[in-house]
Length: 359
Image: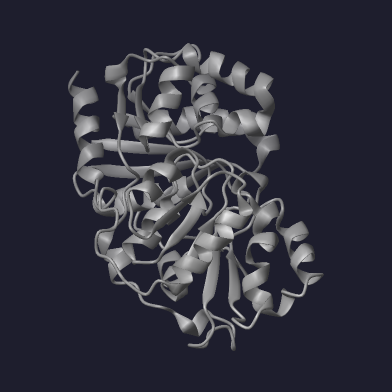
């Protein structure tokens, strides 16, 4: 089968990494990625093609027309749509014509549209999407997002498939700490490393990072704090740390595509997300036996509660969060009971593809 993946931006987020993992593991089907916009694109080392339909948000009408032409040219069996903007674009691109492909809507975001667009914007978006609920097959990345779909879009329960985002076991377990790419002096055996990996945005709780890690960077432990990612709050976060006593112990790495190598250098990963429908980076860290401290929200809570190296913390309990970081840094045991559910789950996606094309 020919599968076209449609996404808003081809960047460094969890949805993009999930697509990369799925395509690298799936030898049964032919895959192509269409990205609505090329701005802020990230250059992955890929064995599959990516087409860009527009340059930026201002080019959305052009991107929709290009999407219509591209789908006509490629004749996909399935269009696998990953984010909300792409859903809207596909709906407009198909106006006035009959779809000759099946549609999969992959829910990565959960409640996030309500936080980004406000209650009114989120409600309008969901009402638009409800017009499609009996025409698409849904895939959610966690029981939490499955419940969100059932509450907001109210599809037939049989049309929702809960499948963890796939992780390529070879990519994870064969990775190694890549110190050649780490600035000199960033790593010594005596310095524990606390890490944050994700989009630098309010939804990821970045406004709490300094308060959380300051005791570990100021005292005799002299830990280091690594921040990996980019986003709208990056400039403000840099300024916040530069004005603190933690500046010399904090490293901003920007966007990186060698996530597994970075994780192997960490002693603990922290995820103070206010919203987290899934938490792919938590899965990746746990597979590498790295402890993860995170707020007990959404799909992240489901992951952390099941893991001996997971530390779920009640939302916005910063003192408890610090205590869990301290415990994680002191705990030396390693486990091989990490979350294996996401390892090589591409066969589950193939099963869904076959089911909807045969129905």
